Amino acid sequence: MNYTEHLEELRTRLLWIFGFFVVFFIAGFVFVEEIYQYFVNNIDYQLTVLGPFDILWIYLMLASMVAITGTLPILSLQIWLFVKPALTPKEQKVSLSYIPAIFLLFLGGLAFGYFLIQPLIFNFLLSLGQDMFQTMFTVEKYFKFLVRVTLPFAIFFEIPIIVMFLTSLGIVNPMVLRKVRKYAYFVLVIIGTMISPPDFILQLVVAFPLIVLYEVSIMLSSVVQRRRDRKLSEALSEDT
Image (cartoon, rainbow, N blue to C red; front, side, top):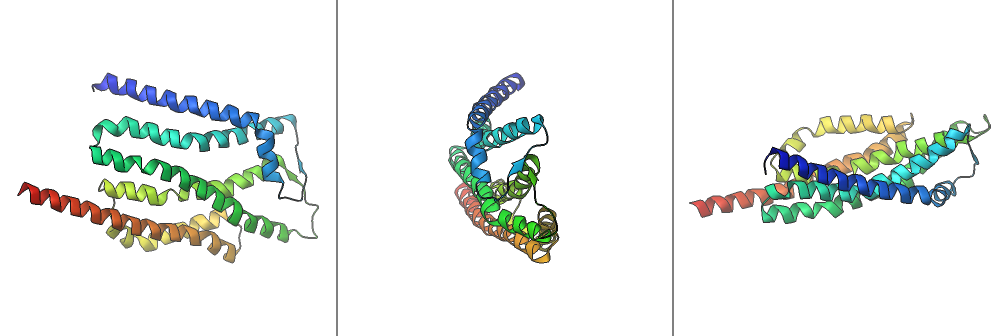
């Protein structure tokens, strides 16, 4: 393809992504009441709004989250279709298998953050104000809290797949990941403190799964690196 054909191909892929985003956004907007009820059924407080725009905000926010989650596999597929001509048949098959893993890990991260981490942080914060304040939450504050706690884990759960992909391209390798391990741990602990409230135990609870994800990434990178080295050795043997 020449430069113009690449731009036309990119435009087509972006239109597909945008089209599916709009479809999922509309679906989320239609079912926003059911989605809202699901997220507020487990709390014992009545959420309030401070103005009419807060109502519109919750509709747009929930519909956007549905659209982002639903469009993720479409986005991954369109990226794969865009780079597919530059890949060998074997690379096409391997990279295509990453797409369902990306989507499932994203959902797994959301579920992990929502069902395990969010209740710990939420209950801890409430305990700080017990018998001191009248507890009342606005819709905007509560759902911003949910997004802040759960969405980072959905992103962090993608780290193993990203590391595997970069290892297959030769950009990273397990030796480098092991060498920078202590620095990575430091960064992950800082991220854990940013997500969680100022409680040492909770910060460790949040940082621990991030560290586990990093170690899993190293193991997967080692597997991919061994396969890559074996293929290179076989290719060199055939050439000689």
